[in-house]
Image (cartoon, rainbow, N blue to C red; front, side, top):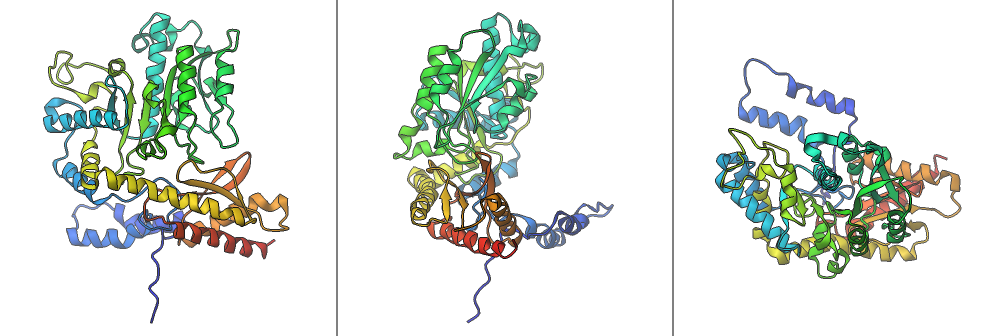
Length: 459
């Protein structure tokens, strides 16, 4: 009996080859195409170059296909094309978003004074959070940041944000956009499990002299490279003592707060001044779907800009556009609400727990395989490792990891990613979808070992 061939993760074509396939799609002409012909063209020329996030072999990034309930919500959102920044453009959409934000605050155990807003992505949410921190710092300095900008500070070059060495690059983006520059970022050392070292943070904030004005500390609940969760409670204690804004980037990891076994790792988020989460990662909802939470709802007042025809100050109805910059954005709350109501919290917890279990079991199993070097203990669903074959030249190990990554990518049958830890290249396995089982992850380990043998014949 002929064995059915597994679908590819993606085509594996070069950029030049993909561009050749896609060129007819952008050959804009006077006459339009019939819908069925257009569908055939997309099916033939575009879709083969998409990435199949729905396959268990996809183990590289934070993407997944929409689950059934989210798909229903997304279809409704698309069909009615509701804007949700202002009451007059969609009363139903605005109220659904407001109620969803309040329900999520309760779900994550935030205080009664907390609030949230939907945003395009975690990067923008992190940027707004740091702006809010800077705005509060300006108020304490005696001026309104929205009116005076950085010129209101006696010496803006002293302003700084402290974050872990493993913090997401969007922190640097925020500092660029705010005009502070990357020179204002102070990196806090990490421990052996790649979590922020709170003692180093404490020492920094207690440093005497007038070198820095640290107005915000960013901790991470699920770092990009390894998924590590910083000691949030300890950081909250330190920030409260020094009266510094504490922002938690939980874009990837906050969802795991909903798992009873991991809930204690997130103690302190209710005391953070702001918090980010991306439901489009583990919850199976369409991109874009991100949220920014604040501990005090009045902190969003710092974002409000009033208009004459739109978002008037005296509007009696709620206008989510007061909380964040986009004056037009989709009804992202609807797919998320539909996903949660369709699955129920029991199934969502199962969805969240399955890939974590797969990664943890693989990590444990690798203990008896000396040709693999485990680089951290997984806090979440990410495993970073290096293959170190017996008697393999140490000087070639970095090249080996890079070769394996490129070879697997080119083959197109599975997907892993690569990062650098302690200055060395590492292979990175990410499990987001519940279809990524322990067996699927172990098949990747076998594939890595097989590819390493192939490399040995080339050196």
